[in-house]
Length: 280
Ligand SMILES: [Zn+2]
Image (cartoon, rainbow, N blue to C red; front, top):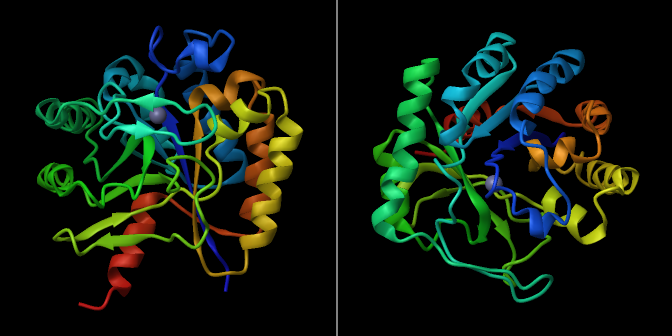
């Protein structure tokens, strides 16, 4: 059975903060988000593949025109990546760079989730259906029903928050597949685990210039998982995609290769199909 690929772009450049340029080890252009949004529409039109854009709320109004063009193409869903990209849970990596990131105080979380919903509605008429959490976490939001409650209250039905293994690192096992947060009391919220390596971490650890090697890694995942009937939540960022590839040539090559072998959907379309198949 053919597998399904759900492509999500985390569009999050906040000059001075996201990404941390010390961690990246080189400067990231200030106009990254504008250039990415402008170029990505052409790439997706050329390959006719759908995708979801996860915007940080703080950048929505300033990029209204580019986002409107994405919507007008009919290929993009727009969802959110919180308002200002603070971690919702604490990250404690037990290997790799051993990064420690303190999670945001609970009192500030609702605002970080609510504002992008309001801004997407006001500036683009978009009802936000999903959220991807900054940095991703081990077990996603399985241990945070308090955050799931906020997500449900603002009308969202899916999350993409589980991208780390039990060492709070990568890669995440491919057997970890989308699941509903039943046990937490949110049976209509679907989690999309991000399997394998997240692009930023693979490329940080192996070298930002190793585009050919990174594409080879992705193609290997395509070949391994194309016929397993699974769902692959693939993640790229605005800044990682452009860092050594101003025309998104490598992104286009990946899309061409993967779309021939996988079904492709936006996150919300995959959600609707999964909900329809769910035993009541
Ligand atoms: Zn992010």
